[in-house]
Image (cartoon, rainbow, N blue to C red; front, top):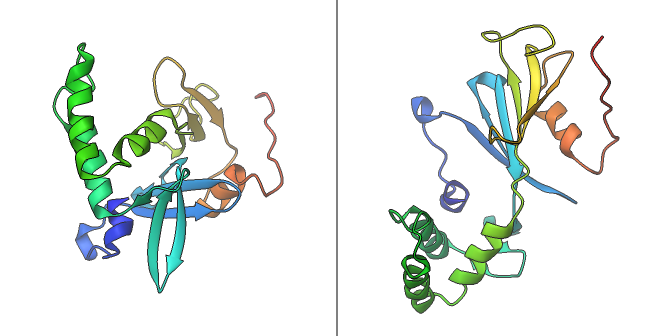
Length: 179
């Protein structure tokens, strides 16, 4: 979010990844690294509007997300121990302080905590390739070890190919068992 709010492209060797947002019926953030060998995508839980050439973001419930609001919410989730605390007051106190600065802070944080992340990663992995157990080209779905699974692909995907798989407004792709 910060990268899109600032709208200052990094220079030359500072570029580690390419970020893009796709907004339509579904909204997704894409991150492409290693010249397309890995393309990550997550649900983008914000509304984007362009006004006078500038991007404006708001939550699904209409809360404006400017630089101050994004910093406020980031400080809540990055505060040491807040999300790991067993005492709820360790979490509540910083939220109340944030709400003194901006009343929408709790609503936005709650919305983000309840949002489905929809994590999908395209992986072109020549190092760990192992037949149908770990195909060279595959999609990794869900990122925790408890729920992750892999879907093999017959060829390399571009970001455009990946987008058509995820875009609910394009024709469906089909899975079939390996032979």
